[in-house]
Amino acid sequence: MDPKNFMGIPGTFTSQGKENGAFREFDATELYCPKCKRPVPVRKRLLLVLPEGDKYEYLCGFCSESVGSKINRQLKPPTVIV
Image (cartoon, rainbow, N blue to C red; front, side, top):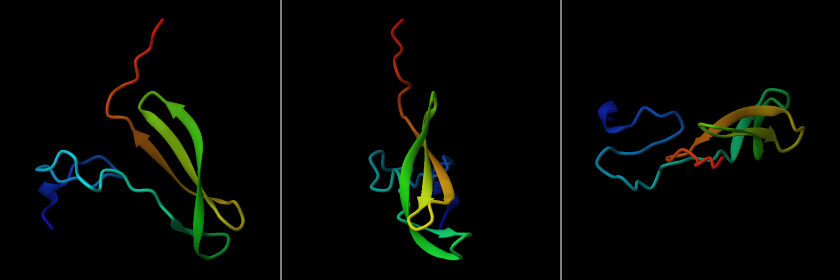
């Protein structure tokens, strides 16, 4: 793998040659839970709405422990009408 082929935005996987790549965003379906001590299915919950994007939290499907977070970065900044 050549690291020059990938953009530096965390959580995205896009080739520089393709603008509408198939792997623009990933959503986790299973993560390791330190409380359950095994990989578990996760639920995605909206945590915050930030200017740079929406922040989501991943919760364990069994014990509801927080096992990770993700920020969905928006390509265009939102338009604010005052």
